[in-house]
Image 1 (cartoon, rainbow, N blue to C red):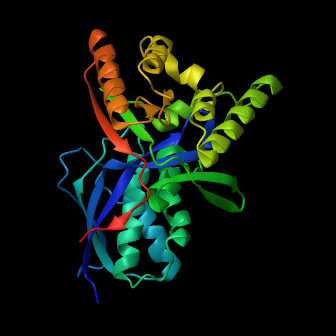
Image 2: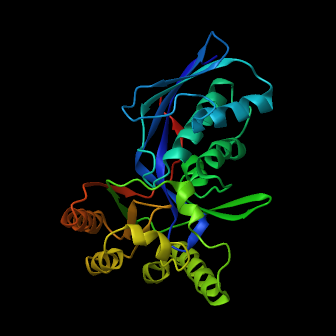
Length: 308
């Protein structure tokens, strides 16, 4: 019987333009690494070795909240340590909370002998995400757990579909040294939208799904447009529309805000283009006296996995 496992869970891009709460994909890097092990004190204990400031009260840590929901479902009172060794910076917009929630439940499930299948872990992981964002959404959780592009067709009941996508897609992620809280970002959004806006958004989402599944890069590019959340969230980013235009001129298929921000993503057809786009975005933020870091990644077919 296993007593300790190491878990890696990838960062994710959510919304992906028009897919608010409905579409997301997994990255190869960066990600969270958590060591999960049994302890003999009968409690859930948090240990932070990541160098990132994290809440250490189990009642306020999203990973432990997800872990507790799984253990309570099984009526198990065993103790576990969650040791954070690598951590995506919270508030970055690339699924920091989702990665922690998913890694915790995957690790505990593995040690317990996998009483749940991987897809069955989704509701437990989502409990922590609800605490973090104040809403029930899976566009980070699903790709973090399952990998690839995931479409959440509906939430009641939860209905998730893997989407095929072109194998030449690369993603440039730029993370400016800003912090946007997901919960605060959601509170800024309107509760109702005009019919015209809804139709444009629905058309773009349908076009993006069609482009991904048919390898139509031009359609993908035309469809990565968000007329709902992005116009509001982009106001906190300097010269956002100018930057988008520059990335397209550099060869990106499309650029948008990852999650609620501040990170931006650009889908590109090669690693070279993605690198050029990322460097352009870094220069843009430097011109506005904002430090940033970037990542170049393929879309990961693999989600959260046991690595040791």
